Structure formats: structure tokens, C-alpha cells
Image 1: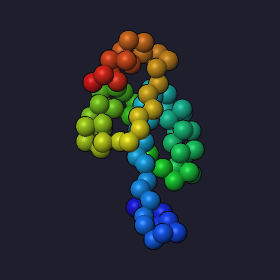
Image 2: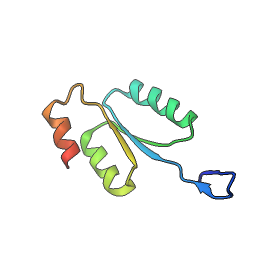
Image 3: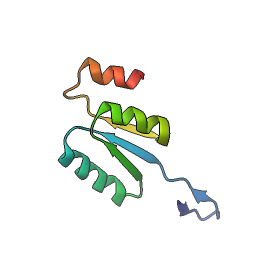
Image 4: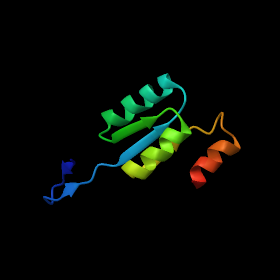
Length: 78
């Protein structure tokens, strides 16, 4: 998967994990990122996110910190 560069090399597609309890927010962000060519995964819970980080090894994790406070920061540490 990836786009060919003019040099003939293939560009790697970044894998992004969206973590947010709000399904509408996840869908909107997923749609925007997929339209830009990113490989997007999502998780509704922090536990689900931790499992996906371990199994999928995303390049970027977008974690909603709004409602989690210290719990969200602990998720980042894990």
C-alpha cells in the first residue's frame, strides 16, 4: 500500500489510530484522514486503544484528552 514517488520508490502510508468515546467525532475524523490517504483505525475505549497499539503498531495515536484527565495521560504512558 502506498503511492509511487517520481523516483520510483513507494511512499509508506501512515497508520493513524483515533481514540474517542464519541462515535460521531471518530467517524468525522476518520473520513477526513482517509480522504487524505491515511490508513485509519479507531477505538471507542482506552482498553481497546491499548490492544490496537500493541497489535497494529500505529504511527500516530490521536487520543481525546477532554474527558479523561489523568486517565488519558496514563493511557499514553501505557
